[in-house]
Length: 394
Image (cartoon, rainbow, N blue to C red):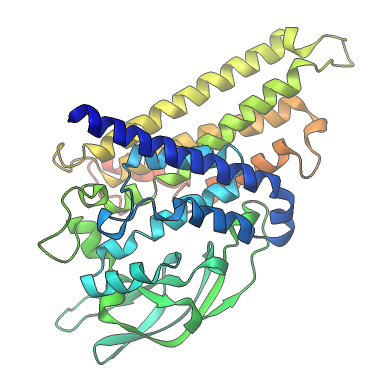
């Protein structure tokens, strides 16, 4: 019986990685179009849906394969080998589509059974006013990745519930048809993510569609006693697990950069000395050092996943800042690999639209995300190592 279960699990992993490769290859073919349009195409979105990539993290009750965290990370890394903007959405769509797993059952059924994609923005910039059994939401939020193809949008607000003295961090999930989308995404990198602005004006959201993030963070469970005990996200720290995909995008991109660097270097001859670079200690040393740095980043992220998977067995003792520091260190290492590869290749790698140029910009853009900022992470981790509260969520 155990062999049969293992075979089924291996079959699922093979299927989802095959789907990831198909999505990545299509996105790579359309990369320049996505750069120009500031969004990946509907073709790529439809392929994510057809291959069920967008439903990877749904609980089994709703027909999802309920893959583990390690497999999800592999999926993100695989897509990023071909196009990091597509990997951004191949990560965020299945991730956001599992958010209803923390809603009350009525809201969960409504959103999941509708079948559309979900995007979100956690920044608590909105306002909420009580109205009967729900709240009216207003506000303006930037950086809403994938909103052009989503049916639902989670927007960050602070809500003071009846009988509570302090406001609570929440994510009301609103219908996209009830808000305004402003196409303002014009950036240096990750252009294909289509991370545009949304505006809500007095939009009513029933209580069953308001995700109480502080409860999800503190309990790691949905708001009912009879829940799926096998669902992997119910046993890991909410934010560190939620941020899993960012370093794996950088890792997948760095992996591609290493392959491109080797290919471009093998037959390159420097005019200054006529030496073939593949035979020169200069580039041999650079490739060796970048490759070992890459494996070090891999090792850090393996540790990150192990800490997530063993979180409850370890007594929930891994601090948010430790997760933050491990994740951002791996991203920094991948960014350093990308920069060094470009600087070693020289001016020939600068041409706009080339693989090196595109991947460098996208990896740097991943590193600018607020959950990827290395200086913030080491400051927080240092505080916790000396026994102070860092205040970070993970």
